[in-house]
Length: 81
Image (cartoon, rainbow, N blue to C red; front, side, top):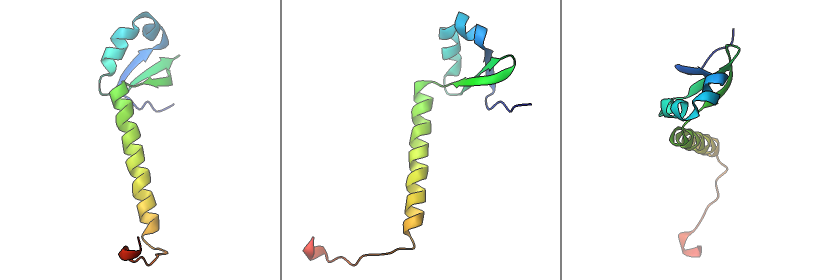
């Protein structure tokens, strides 16, 4: 059995019939779109998607900073900049 990573679900048929209503249902949470009772896609509001992208970017920045903690370091004289 496949995991469904959403508390709200709709069928593909329901999505076709009532897209606006399903989109309203999405608000701040993902909606799993099921095809034959298996997750086929996830519908996210634009605001939710943008927050996910920001989190991903923050996570990548944090990982990059952790990698750079060990060096190598370059000595810099502020007067030369």
